[in-house]
Length: 121
Image (cartoon, rainbow, N blue to C red; front, side, top):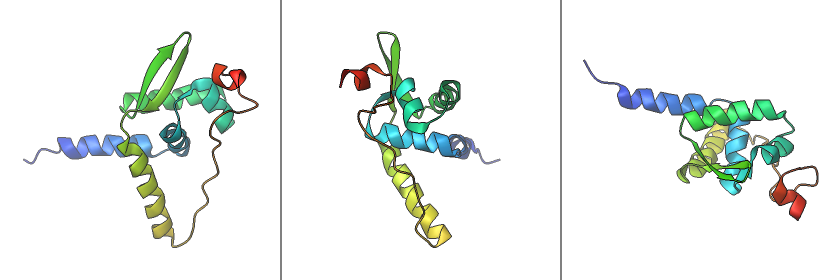
C-alpha cells in the first residue's frame, strides 16, 4: 500500500485555503502584520468571525502570531504563501478565461480602526 501522508498534508493546506475570507486575511498579512481589530476593520466583518478564521489558519500552520501587550499580531508563517496566493489568482483567472475582480484591501493606517497603530498615526 502506498502511503499518502504527503497528499494528506497537502489536502489539509488547500482545505485551509479554500475559504474567501481566509484568502483575504492572508492577502492582508502578505503585506503587513495585523491585529484582529485591524483585520476586522479592513474586512468589515465581526471580530468573532475574523478570530474564527484566524484560528483555522493558525491550526493549519499558515499564520504565526506574537503578543504585544494585550494585542496579538498575526503574520504569514512562511513568505512563500504570498507567492502561492499570487499564483492562485493567476490560475483562477486562467481557468475562468477572464480577468477576475479582487477587491482592493487597504494597507497601512485606517481611519475606522481602533488598533493602537492606527490610532497613533
